[in-house]
Length: 559
Image (cartoon, rainbow, N blue to C red; front, side):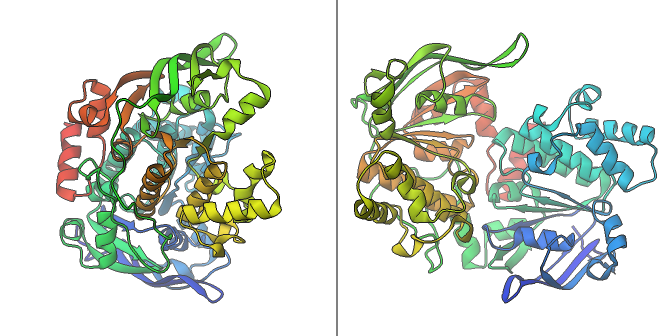
């Protein structure tokens, strides 16, 4: 894609907060209809670069030039910039639920966005909003127009955000991690949508992502950011084939896809500011077919009431068992029932039918002190480490909380246990008094794992525990989890929408769709010859960190 006459030209962009400069000298050009990627880990400055282009980096000192068709946005008067923002330059954010007003209908918000950047009447704006909903693939736009954000799935909410961003016909669209929280099939649909909109409208798209597979199939050019600087820029084909910078090579080597060797630790970057990576000394223990089941789920049914006379069956006749010291992978799209199964396994929700047994005990018959004792042996690690940790508590207080809740040990004993557990997950004593806001996502997830391990449990439920992490940090946490399983004999229920990650972690795998387990079996056998069409479709939707292969995969799906 030619950038001889760029629609957006960013020159030596610097963003400072006092003495800290998290964006330091970023430059790139974007042509009409071009797809450009900005990749890197959390804290690299990707999102702050986009916010600075929109002049939304509040309380920051921003310098350099951001030229939109030759006009410097950094020097525009505020009133003129308000017309540009959301009009000529639009942005799609990572979490559509927090970007949409929960008490306004989808239609109201779309009409409001259209009228803000045009002189369209309400009738004309409504017609345009309905057209945009149809263009981005929202079914039955007339009916969905009057619904609220909570009535839409995550993928549909993201489509609404894209419709809102494209409604004014922007010259530039900044898409900040638009697929991070989505399952692979929905992710693929969103990327195809952005691709089509760039073709149909000639919009230049800047895709900000840490998913190198997604960037491979979408981007013409890729900028790799680290510590606020662009360390490498190249056409996507060349960058993936022969990366010039060591950091780019490390990111690419950390990608988990269906070709990764499941018997070896994932390569991660070793550097002084890393997340204290802990590498397993040996491959994980092989699956033991003779191991006794620790968890047995038999014919579990769970429904939820949506309204008067209306129910949805979240889990329908689910059965499986998890053997001691092994990992059972549960995979499926959002809304498939995975998290409901996790709550059932931990006896956190009553069942409509069926039983869940832990170490031979039917959890529905256990109450009071005995249930409390059993729950010490089973713990959970959640998807979002920031949301799962109390931001006002120090690391030591967070990890010690389960010990206090179960009245285990005195103050000195708890302190020693906390220190030992933090060391176990690769966090040194310097982390004791730190707050979550001063830590990276990977470090926070290690704290969450330490909190789960401090009671010395037998069983962990890992519910999308790495899906929100950057590729190299995700690799570190996966290595850590496998190392802990080998050293401590832990049993895992590993829940994810990412089949490639499940393949790397699990001994046995079950695939869920609309509350039903459609296929399950030994990992190697299931991935070598999947039987159900849904499993095939999930595997086909996994992005590949190779531009040529990824574009060929997407073309085959579209045809």
